[in-house]
Image 1 (cartoon, rainbow, N blue to C red):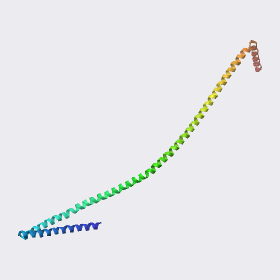
Image 2: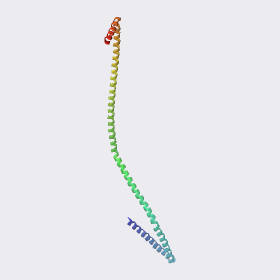
Image 3: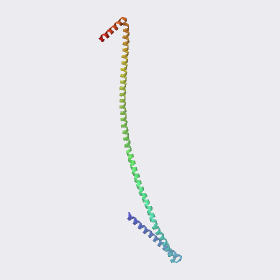
Image 4: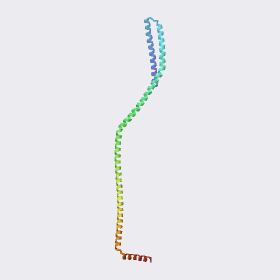
Length: 199
């Protein structure tokens, strides 16, 4: 690459000098021809053309000396911009490829998400059914225990009522059948039993 730049630089200089020489000789020839036709002095015309050639050579030399670095700097900027643009384009192409690959996989991902959602939904439904069954069983067991407790309480209350009624009935029967003579006999028996227990 360095050799090709030097070759291009050398060729451009040779081209500039050759072009300037051709223009100089063409201008000098046309000037001589015009001087001969007009009858002017040929030496004056030659000095004009030599003066022109010197001024043109100085201008060409200044341009040849000063412009190539400017052109080179512009060329390097352009080359750098092209390189950056190529890198940016490559990155954009990569991102585009990634996006296209993601779009290509999007249907598969959506199908996988749907399948997972359906599977999770079925599992959640089964879990809720099991939980409901468990809750129903617990509620039924609690209700049964409460019913049994209420039944026991009712039986005990019923027994208490029956006992009270039996005691009340027995008391009424005793009061009816126990007259004063029977009361004295019961008290005498009780007193004798106390005396016998004391001996």
